[in-house]
Length: 304
Image (cartoon, rainbow, N blue to C red; front, side, top):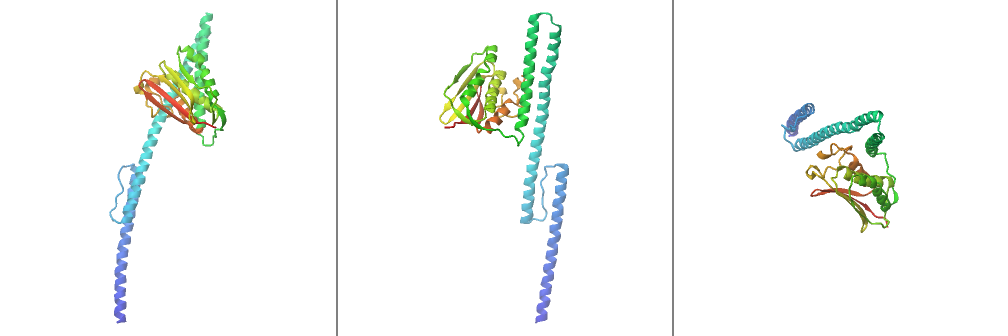
């Protein structure tokens, strides 16, 4: 009886060993097949999904996770290529934008050297100064944007009088507004309001927004600033000739330019810098289109 029991046990163990061996071989084959498919996907960058021949819950879960990761990788590669193409295009446009004033500078300098009339000489000098200022502004924008992309850069914040900053920077555009023969509608509350911020950054925010309105606007200019409950808001609106060309969702993206603004002396970084500085100061910024009126609004929390 014991010998029969031992023989039956050996027979059962033998069958179990065979089943386990078959399962083991199937598992190895399936793993090798998955590795082969992964190698193919890696080399060919195909959209093909990983499939399994030996259907078990474990392999189905594994294939599912691999396919999800592959889809994420394909999406990231596509997004990277799109960004790379946009960056190449932006660099090309930026090179053109910088080269244009440099080329004209050479031409006006030659005219200045050859001119005999004092009136013409003064006019050429003024044009050359404006071209140099344009280049300085563009290079400063590039420098600032690069600095803001550095994770080690820290914007030092302290208590600032935002009312004074806004008024001072609006006044700094007086001559330019007068030169463009614009009659702005400016309404700024004069009561002092304090925020937690950075004077240089806040001034840059106001300057960039107004400069954007003057550079890309078609005449009308409205500025509103003041306290609204526990926030201080600054809003600048300007009319535009081709509102359909403006993508409001992209205006704060680096190197963005609407079609009608591509010939303007701009890097396409001004509003991207403005957004970055605003958020580093704990504020919010948004843009909207109302008919042919383009508006940018900035808000900061008020210190009591």
